[in-house]
Length: 197
Image (cartoon, rainbow, N blue to C red; front, side, top):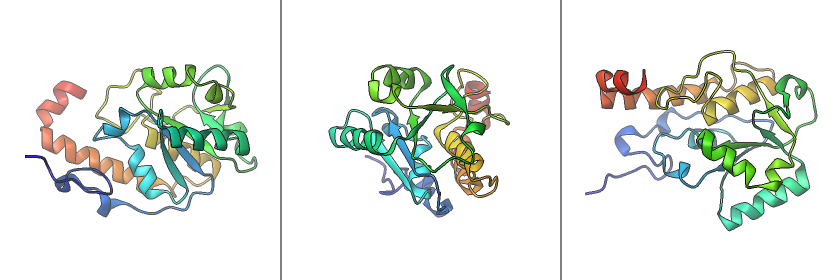
């Protein structure tokens, strides 16, 4: 017997976070390029951004219509790719510049690197990176390094810096915190400590 899921957040009704969502009007448009396997991850954070931000589009990699939208976006609007690397400019250098669309890759680190390497279009984009000021709040995946962040945390960090408003996007993180806490309670503190601490 399958569990009944919320049509909006795609979580089981017992763990639906829709009542925790806050709509936020982001000035910089956000486009999330999601790996097709990440779309099936029940505890992914991109869906929180999609449901909370007024200007946010979730595109599935490998989906023809989505790939066409991405191609138009790149050719017509010159977006910035938020991705770390030696060829990335610091986020601080973008603050104060003209508004441009932002692209975030939603996947595991290994798969996101592959998505980038397999896409000349993405490789052609100017890249922007940031140094996190605080530890990650996403406790349900082991990070490959101390600077790794969930997609939602990256979006909140970047938008907060670009709009010079550290409080505006905190409701999105509060929704993520609630989702994580519900999952920890469901699995039990002992299981959580054994697998994620």
